[in-house]
Length: 113
Image (tube, rainbow, N blue to C red; front, side):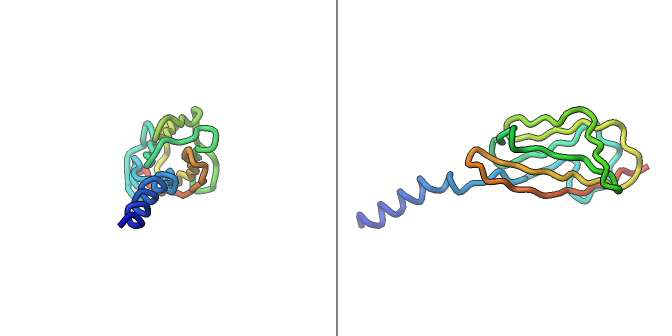
């Protein structure tokens, strides 16, 4: 019984160390068709390390369209692009939480006329 209690306690203590700053939501959402967004917000599962997290807004030709500097604060990455023309766009992001594990991914959205 003591052994099982110790194992359970170790699992509870070790669980937070296994966490990663993973993307849980984006606005616009992946795959959506939207009017030109004034801001793009990525929400992560935990607070980010600003020095090791960020995002790029890319057009169909792979050009960076970020405009203002990307803001990394708490669990959010925010991009404030200039007005986007109709077409397909990609947000390429990378995140690192306080444990230092880097994750990366992409979301795709289309700006409608």
